[in-house]
Image (cartoon, rainbow over all chains, first blue to last red):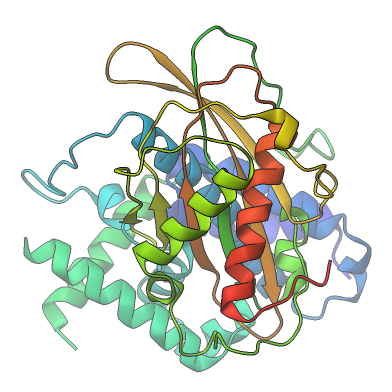
Amino acid sequence: MLTKAEVFERHGIELTRFATSLVRPTDAQDVVSDALVGAMWSDGWGDVDNQRAYLYRAVVSQARMLQRSQGRRRRREQIVAPVVAASSFESGIDVWEALGHLSASERAAVFLTYWEDLSESDIALHLDVSDRTVRRWLVRGRTKLGRLLDE
Amino acid sequence: MSNQLDERIRQMMQQVVDESPPPPDMSGGMPLTPVVDRRVPKWAFAVTAAVVVLVVLGGTGWLFGGYGTDVVSEPVVFDFASDSLCEWFSPEEIQSIVASTYTEWGVPLDPTDQMQQIHDENSDCYWAYPVVSLSVDESRVPSGPFESHPALDESVQVSHLSDGSYGLAFGVDVILTVEGHPEPLWFGHATAVDDLGVDIPTVNTLGLTIANKMLQQMGWIDDN
């Protein structure tokens, strides 16, 4: 059984890269630390079989919460001070702006597919969802990115 | 699959990894989790209140346990597998729900103001009511059972309005757990009040009252 420090040593970098794909570099460390604290200090941590997958899910969960919070704020600001939506890309592709059009789940599916080279089944196991759900996220993510990259 | 698109996405992911920060410093032991400051600043500015964001959240409950959840009984009409909250309510229906609730509370409404549907990048729906000047007749506000409602999730923020004034926006998110449903569904609407005497519990009660009416039209019952 690995200690918490050993688990962090083993997975910290990949989890931070994963978090970066979900929430941008500026928020990635906070998301990872919150996820690790919530996961590894929970009562059930000792009973977890696949700790790596468990931590990936925890990071996705934290990323979703952050995205929700930021989304709420943006929507309310838009209501009280409407702004004209700028075009997605002026020149070149801004990666973060492109990824901002994807949900956390879609970003997760895209990152795990294209960077970690995981299959849909492996991603489904990682995130504790069905293969069909992963496929849906991936299709949506690719479609949105494809549309943005074609503009 | 387009190989060119796949390659471009891979390049994007490479950039993500290149710009990824180092892992957080966990050497100091268990770090403190961020605390959300929900105090309401008492400023003499126009006040806007965002009311009722109805969120349906499903799947593994523990992932969202800290966010505030509510267990709802079996659906009668709305089918989360196939129905879309973005399409379930027409603008007129939402208008009717909001207007009837505000009327019950003694809040005067401009009949020309209409709800607008806003879609964001996460495929969520968000209904927005134009910012209007309202005042709440608190003598008609029913005592709310919702102040300690587990689905209540308040947020407070200040928004800088385009005309140079400041708006105080605070809102209510209602979150429902649907067992076995993996995807969260967003639905919400917002409105505005400029009565500085309106307090957060009042706005929260208003928001949840509207949310319950929406649930009734969906054929759902709040078990909580």
